[in-house]
Image (tube, rainbow, N blue to C red; front, side, top):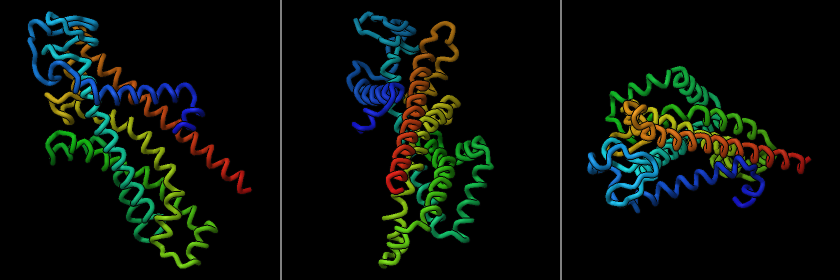
Length: 288
């Protein structure tokens, strides 16, 4: 991590700092808040306070308050905790499923490979909105349903990346040497092939976190994701859309947090991809 920081550009460093700040804020701010971020306060005295306001109890509100008198900064940080947790869990689980399917299909080949890739092609052909509507009809809205959608619609790309890497590694001399020494096919796959084929999957998962957070926010905005009173950046934006003229900060605060998170995840994923590609090129030059 230290070497990655030293070699990273200023955009990547800024993205890492933003993500660390958001993670710390999501963990600490709701726990240290003077009032519950989900409880309705004194709506008459506290509602729609602008950013940088101090209420009658001398409490400072960095981003102002919403229509129910709740502090927007505390709610945005709690929403970040939920959105990041759902996004990371969905991306990691989808990546794990994709790695397993891609590795087994690429190694075994034949009918198993055709079935796995055919299933991926079918899911890619179905619009994500259709899968969303089906899941919304089967499960009640919430984090579980969002993670399920992320896994169902996110494993195919990772599986194809890993499958291609595994098929390319099968004929490499060190794989043939391991097989000649008596290693079982399962051991060769999980101990020798997969560690060398997993790098593109890691990059895809890192890039997928931002997309997962964005999808979760979109579902919550439509009322199919995290449900009030639990805050999500999506349902906070939805709460503020009717007051966009009177109190624009209600929608702008979670919107800016969402944009910064997605942009930071994308920049960090791009930097990780460039770093892994550079390491692979250096390794090839050293071998030649």
